[in-house]
Image 1 (cartoon, rainbow over the protein chains, first blue to last red):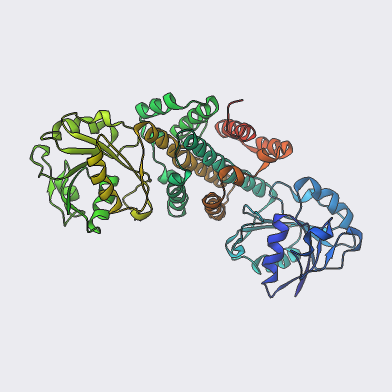
Image 2 (cartoon, each protein chain N blue to C red):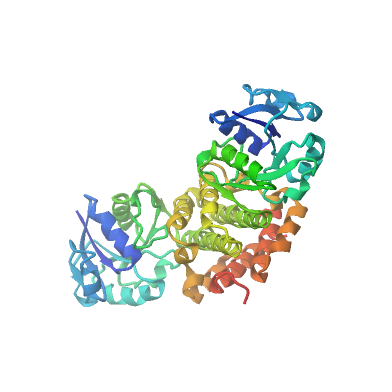
Length: 253
Length: 253
């Protein structure tokens, strides 16, 4: 079994520990958490350490903490040529300490502790400084996911940016839809089948093929009617910029 | 059985005919299509007419055509106090001719002919001028959907606007995510599990609770890093306006 130490106790660390627990190729030999007590119930089958200077030895150290803590933690644990990776979409490998063999292990999903995830279906994007380490990292990733991709730091950053558009920003449009419903005594339940179908459609069609609506049709009467009933200036601005963007097919004029 | 004539042969008409075909309460006695040939194969169990002046009599006439053709068709068929409804989210009942009893029958979903839909799960929003007609319309709607709502014209317009945000605009953000992927030699497949989970999350959490990301966290370093790698000015403008909107919780400052 490949021995792995996981640094962190947030959402990503939590789901990684659970996913590896079901695998036969990877053994999580230790989890680091600043606060041992809060996570001991959650990770009851794994040894927890709250001392970065006293980690057990392992084939791989996965740093799964917030972006701004990665470098600091890496500088402490990067001793003895350890193999250290981070799980961040936004960071290059350079933020890791050069005393270690370095890499990235980026699972592309939105995690929250209260929602179970099927890791099998989550793309894991790998990057490594050297080929031997990459082979090891592939085995670790394949132990929990069928979707393993090798991408470089520049691609990972671009992917992280795409994820902001299709996750953070999309969710915010759901929020605006909900706000308009609330303002008009309508239940958000009304929108749920449409939200589901909109996501389902692009599993089979490209977003370009799936595009419909007044902006796509050039139906200026409907566009004006919508602008007339939007009461919030921020919503109006978003409506206008996205309508125009659809008409330019998402490109600068 | 309640006798229904459906005017139109587009996506909505197509799916309505199919849905009613499975119901035991509603009989589609005729479909009107300008071009009889193109739809005869599709609607092989239903009589097709291409002459608006020679429709059979029925308990209900559903006009399922593009918004700008509704009034014209209504003016032709609104004779003999017929009960006439349209399927538009954007139109009030006023666009229908006063010679008829009027109403709206708005199924809130994105339809395309090549995708099967489960009408049971599609909200149908009803409005009527009088109570007796509303009762009939409820029976017709319940024959194909478990989700029947009574809403007024103002609410229907607001709902239609919400739908633009959670469907048209959301799909456009998928498109931008895809564009960024293409630019960086990344497969859109990478984003699909995230797109699915983003939609699934708001089936249980409110969009406000589900919101994550740099804008929500106030992580200005990540925001700046994203702005630095966006090459398209239109995408940059959208990134900025949606980031700011998340920080204002979707409201005008």
